[in-house]
Every structure is written in structure tokens, then in C-alpha cells.
Length: 95
Image 1 (cartoon, rainbow, N blue to C red):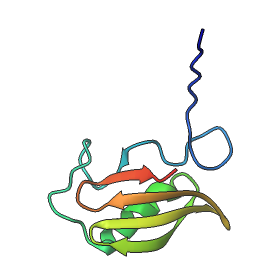
Image 2: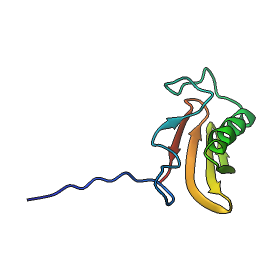
Image 3: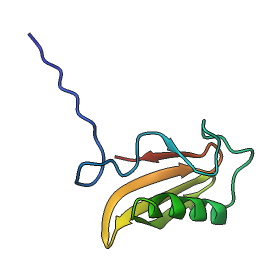
């Protein structure tokens, strides 16, 4: 007999997920689509606002084409690393 155990996975410690799986940009539609690639400045502002509401900060690590890789920090501690797609508005943890 086999038993399958499934548990939610996320970066960081505590009881809440920092970046829910497949979340989307607050500037995008409910389904996460933008009409066009938002600018890097617009993306930074939207992501800062999104994480500020959770009491967290962001640090841009890399910008490659329409993708932005960023670290989410709580003080000086990195609690998540995410990839943001400026075209679709999707925000996904790399963990």
C-alpha cells in the first residue's frame, strides 16, 4: 500500500505563502493579461505596491526581455525569489 502526502510549498518560514502560485500583477486583468508589455518602471511600481501591502520589499536581480527576476525581502532576509512576466502579468516563485 502506498500513501501520497501533499503539502503546500513556498519560500520562507511562517504560515503564509509569500507569493501564491501563479499570482498576477495588480495592473493586469483578473486573468493576468496586459494589453502590451508594461514598462520596467511600471512593473517596479506595481510589484513594490503588491509586496508593500504584505509588509515586504523587492530587490530587482535581473531584467531579461519581458521578464524581471526579483528577490522579495523581509528586512535583510530574502523570503522568496520570483519571476515576473511584463506581458502576461504572471508572477511566479522560482521555488
